[in-house]
Structures are given as structure tokens and as C-alpha cells.
Amino acid sequence: MSSDHKIRWSEFILAYIPTVIIWILSVSLLALPEYTLTNAIIQSIFILIWSYTGHVFAHMISTDWPFNILNPHVYLHHKKSVDLPRWLELIIEAIVNFFGFFIFIIIQNIFNFKIFSTSLLLGAAFLYITIHILDYSIIGKEDHKLHHTKTFCNYDPEIFDTLFNTRCEPEKPYTNMIVEVPHALFAVVLAGVIKYIWKLD
Image (tube, rainbow, N blue to C red; front, side, top):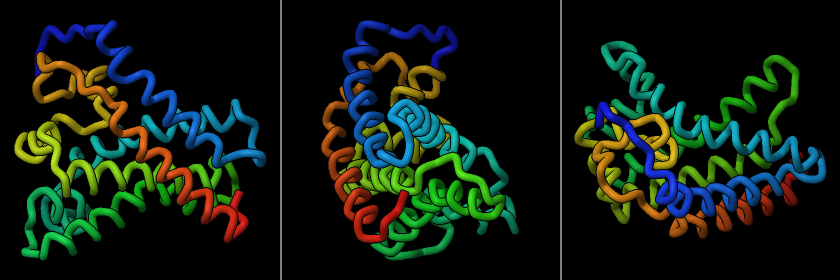
């Protein structure tokens, strides 16, 4: 990471903004008609930011015994402290990723208040899991491999790594995120089907 962090704005806009707009709008649709579009967009933006900050937090919290077993993202997925088959490790990681969004549903139920649409949270979770497990872990993305070797950089989404100077190699060209648009469509369709079947908000 560079100390003289300078964002290349024209490249930034072309690489990230179209995809982020599609992500936000498509996931926001899941909250309709129970929430207004403006409210849904605000929810989507918050959850998108959370997908980055939650990941950063997961790496910052203690990983020493006995707390390390409470942090399976680092304990199993990064440090591989238990020798698991790759498929089982990724299933556990997908569940951990899902819980990072489902926690908001739990908190809302415990304190009996409603801020986030359940369907929107599901869509955001499916989007995150699809990109992290399929693209980054199974297919493999070079930037994500750096995250596993250097740990405290390349948290993703890359737009936030760029904004907050947490890219492992900030001098590299920005990745055009448009290739991740199909994930949003898949996530929205899957969450939409679940919303329809279970009559979620």
C-alpha cells in the first residue's frame, strides 16, 4: 500500500461506478414495495459498505485462543488451522459470509425494530457469497490471492480498497468490475424467488 495515496478518478469512475450502480439498484428492487425506492437504495449502499468494513473487522479482531475459533473466516479460511477438504472449508466460509448479513436480521428480531428489508439482506448476502466463493476462491482472482498471503489488504469490493487505500498493489490498473454484474442478477433472482415463496418483506 502506498503512503502517497492518489485516486485516478477517471479510471475509478469507468472501472467501478457502472457496476456499483447496477448492484445497488438491482438489490434495492428486492425491498420494494414494502420500502420506498429511496429507502431501499440507502439500505443497499449501507450494506455494500458493510461488506467491506465487516471483512476488515473480521481480520482486525483477535485470532488468539480461545477467540480464534469464534472467527472461522481467519481460523479456517485464511490460516487453515484445521485440515479440512477444500469443498467443506468453502461451504463453512459461505455460511460465515451469509451470517455476516443475517446478523442484521437477528439484531432486528432481538430488539424488535425494523430497518433493513429481509429480502434485500438475502440478495446482498447471495451477491457477496457468489463473488467470494465462486470468483475469488474457486475460479481464483490474483488480487484475492494477495489478500490471502498479505492478509491486511485487498478486502474487496475493490472500490473501497481504492477509496481507503487498502489495495495490496495500488499502482496496478483498477479492475473493471463490470464482469461481476451477472452475480447481481443471479443474487436478485434467487432472493426474489425466496421472497415470493416465503412472503418475505
